[in-house]
Image (cartoon, rainbow, N blue to C red; front, side, top):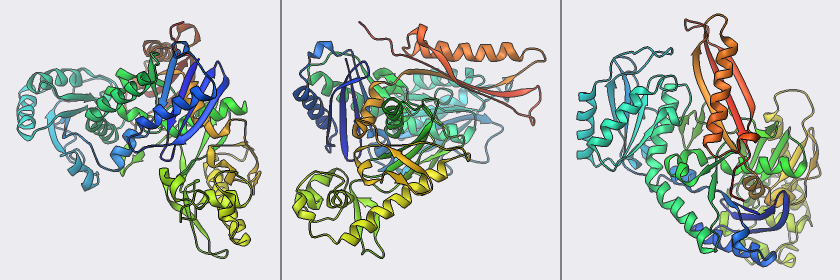
Length: 516
């Protein structure tokens, strides 16, 4: 058996699975400290379907802890950014495009040092170790506790980043160090930004992961704990401590993966209607379509793996304002306070959940408390929600080909059975906890994204090498070797670079290997 848990802004969902069979499913309110909500969810599963904790082989959690910390600019460590690029790459210093409040939140300091590589691995300049030591001394005086190291074209050759980490670790014992070649893709500033964000979250990650592990252990479960990544694969707790940015988009990703399992469709549009937002994404061969450009997170441009998701500020907790002629739904939401603020729960705030109950689409709370609502207002609010959702689905389509739509999430009762201009909406069984199911069935992945100098006649050998490296990375991350397969391959020649330069990206995934 496995337990999947997804922590959202409003609800914490949990499922108990035996293979792909759902034995128990529960939706509870997210608590301010999050972990107590997880304990309550596991206890709820046990009440629904008594199970031996020793029979649970793995627990998978998708969490919003880290993205929330960045958005709210809180609990971030004092962080320094070291860029190995001189004499090139000095015109735009680290964090140049960051919102000022986030620079202040991380006490951001930037250092430019000689080093870096060309696209084919040749040195731009030799690494200046004396410069690094002087920079480390300054960091120590400034109270820096976390360091992000970025070198030009380090995904091609990481030797300078690795050596710089050794030097800084010797000068600043105990500092958490993040290396850009392990986090971002080709693209210096975006990769550097992702690395700085990761570094700023390292201290928080240690405490959060320990808290999650304690909440699972507190439920009497000794099975290994895994966290969901942005691309729909899993990472163990040690990996999560080092790379918290890998969890940022785990919520919508889990929902899409769960939708694939529940609907039996591996290519479709997925609308995940939660308590605060509706996330619209596209499944391609069972995995979320990834963003092909940089992704902005809290106003910071990054290029780590993120799903291509369009969020609309409509959910079960969305505020409803105005009358039938000018009704507005969202983007403001009562969030996890839904059960105390919504009318059906005795509150004083009109929410989308009240609209759903008044329309007979949901049966929660006290229906009599919304019996007075204007029927025209109810219809207008539902029409507004349907129109915004249909527009979002249309914006996510990349061709004229029909694209089935699967609705998941507890708030999906807000959607009609058919969206104008889009088509029928499918709501599979257990759709309300699709995100937790997606976490529970997640696989383990490995990815390679690198620029290769492809010599004449060696293309096939280079491609095979990249694919094998991706497979090896998946196995190293915990995938069962016999199940690993390449699920995504992209090859793009770069004509403005010499030497037949080609960017190759390969992704391989396999089933998690856990003890019997």
